[in-house]
Length: 418
Image 1 (tube, rainbow, N blue to C red):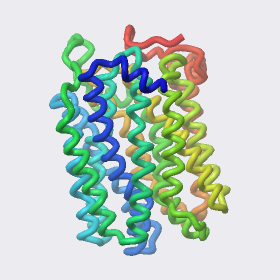
Image 2: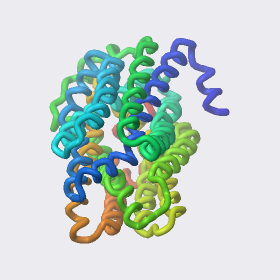
Image 3: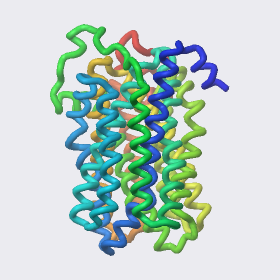
Image 4: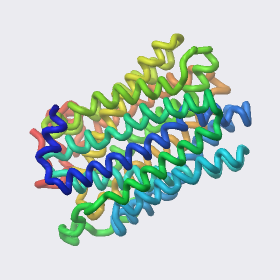
């Protein structure tokens, strides 16, 4: 298998580090994903207001938004493993708070705190993998290492859905906490993090928030992630409730499992091919599949149609997320990578944050089904923006989006695509 051949060429210490990083990531995402199909239902036992459900779900991104920039700089300064551990500690503590203090105001607060876990862990994980990966195999290794997300989304929702169904919410939250503790213990096995002290001071000048965020190399990927985040936030907040309203005899955890399996399979060829063909064409394909997933949910009335939507969502996320991570790695130097990664993912955070409250309000106007038509349109807007703004001119952007030219914002000498 190609992945085993690739890892067999790496030195022993690097393989050991990547293995420990991978397992820590798998336990983290399994913990987070175990709560995906159950949190909206848990909130609905405390309130029947779609507005309040949306607010609680969306508040998760508050911690992400506030702490992303700070934790990104902390990752560059104190190391990736340090901030990964911060994320795992938060992910271990907060589910216990859900179980012990069930009220809407407290859930809003704890969901916001829970967002810190991804702010700390996800960007540091991606930056660490990018730091460690050999440049010529960067996209391939990022693709393989990003498998922690679909695998976590495969195991987590299945675990969460079954535990909630047979034992209730409290044992589910305890299990989510223990999974994060396991990930925390695995970070003790991570050795060197990679050299972040090798480039000139000119390339490592400390940039401000808006200077970084509005830079074209960051602005367009962040905008794409904003629109994808709006779609994902809509899905995670209201898809289980839509299935319940339509009396679909399908555990929502199976939707996430279908997404995870398709995302798992698609990442094997895509990472390697993005090193050969460039990142642009895969980002375009990934956005397109995200839109297809939202459209399928809009039309769905049977269990298999929701499963097809899950497969399309998995393909979309399995392509677009690692491709954007690789794109950002191409466009950054190691000393700034944690901060730039964190800043770019602010777009995704905002999308998740506002999707719940905005779509919750719109449900009262257009109905719960029609918000997925809106989410479909948002994905198509993201595709148009990427196809016209991702490179230095509209013509070059379009060529980059279909794999016909190189990324003009890539650091010279780091990566080049025909």
